[in-house]
Image 1: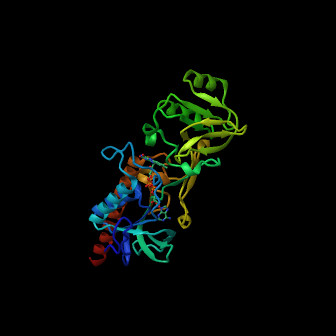
Image 2: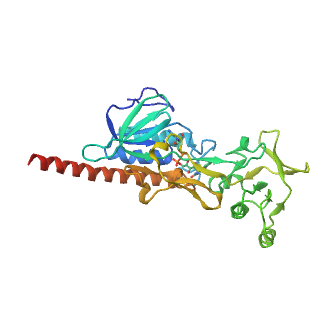
Image 3: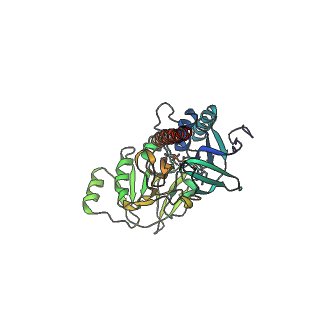
Length: 334
Ligand SMILES: Cc1cc2nc3c(=O)[nH]c(=O)nc-3n(C[C@H](O)[C@H](O)[C@H](O)COP(=O)(O)OP(=O)(O)OC[C@H]3O[C@@H](n4cnc5c(N)ncnc54)[C@H](O)[C@@H]3O)c2cc1C
């Protein structure tokens, strides 16, 4: 069924109505597809191929797979889905909308790809992940995922004992700094105009965290391509090798507007997500959501687990619908 080979292999789109289309083939989407495919559901994963952790060297904190390069993990996942006849199509969903339900009232959706191809599905799993929005500091974005990090559990160990700077973005950065202090003794907190009360300053002092209140001008690059430091508005450069920054996390919604899935902003300017209930069910019958698209802080393991749970619930939902339809059919013939 695969029409190309290698890491970017893509399968042909099946004809007719499939049981499930999974939008997004990262940890959440692939694990959801795996559960559906193993339940003998026809499933198609549409994936545009830009998982959130693509810039990272390895996936950390994932039991049994710690340090595996992201591309390798997802390639393994795709092979596992294909092993059970799931299809993986490289492409971007540009539209997904409810279509007329079946005669038995079972939901239907039309999914359109950027190249114009369409498919019809009984259920949808939205697993599109999120986009990290960095603060607007000159030179910062170029080091994202290497010298610029956000997550102490993803790359904290790798930057242990380095001179680390925390670029504050709001009140939550205080806790962020304490988490990175656990990993290095050499920590500088750049307030960047955010408020820091006297009690917090005393707590930082007690942990030997230096505080810089001068505005940050830019990130200075070292000769080796890494980070040399942070230039302040007065021209002074504070030497740092690593910068930790909390990003604004926004669920990826492109192409999904037609589903009208409810969304919400999380407190503290943390980000925006799709609202979901038990096992990732949404208010739109037939649509589930899993991974970072709804759980902004989920790591790879939690995203995969959420996808698996959603996939199992989607199958359970269809099992009931199939049985209801069979009963109507049998009754009609009596
Ligand atoms: C730099 C960095 C390092 C990280 N390191 C770690 C780590 O070490 N350990 C860890 O556990 N977690 C780590 N994370 C977190 C990890 O990236 C997330 O937990 C994980 O990617 C969430 O999985 P997901 O499936 O929800 O989303 P993603 O992995 O982002 O996958 C979403 C997929 O959907 C696709 N997509 C989106 N929209 C569409 C569309 N319209 N049509 C088709 N496809 C679409 C995307 O291309 C992407 O492939 C890291 C994050 C970052 C930013």
